[in-house]
Length: 298
Image (cartoon, rainbow, N blue to C red; front, side):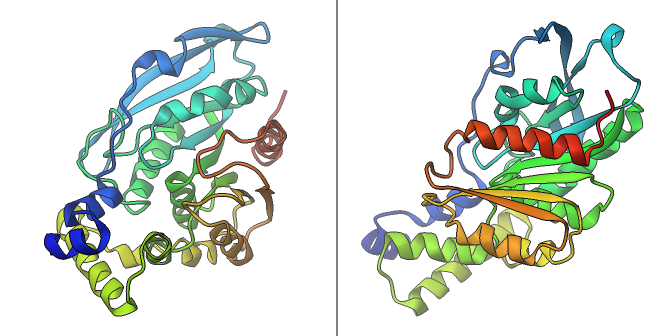
């Protein structure tokens, strides 16, 4: 198989399945999460780092940004949980966390299992990540420091939000940046865009890759169909996608938006790609969305 793939694609078989479930980990240091005590618009906040254990017994590296106790406006505040993308980590949350904190919304971020500083050998592109979210939501609700909860996901994190939203309708609102609608469709598109290959060869190769992933990571790629979960999700949602995204084509977001059953809105960016920094106007829209759906009290 390696010899055939090398001849056709110039890559090894192991490189294909590893790209899906064992991408490079984000190697970061804690300074990228900001200071553990800091100010925003004259108010004082703190970051608490902690570890949670998911259903599979894996430790999740987490961070919780909130006001210091003496300046907390009320005992229980809304919280947005940030869900990072593939090959990324909780550090994605920090640049925009301050905007939410200034609105009396706390922020929780963590490394999915298999990512960053969390335990785990593989990712599952949303399948086991939903259990990680459940673990975090349960922790937050048991602290008695959180009122309403929102999810803010990007790429794999956005897919996870959709799949978890079907499970937990008590989530108040979700922002979904660059999700894919179907893993099988996405993988097929990525291969076809990069190499010319007969369909029967592609289908056989995908079958082998799915078998390897099932054996190593114990999940079925065919179950990663976010569009099916979107059809059963009624949580208010804000979608966004860059039209120049050459990794996840923007039709995925369009298809998900059309299938989504909750109150919804969508923003498409004419510029930027899958990993681009989002425009300031959208960051403001995201903050307003969470302010309204999480029912923030001042």
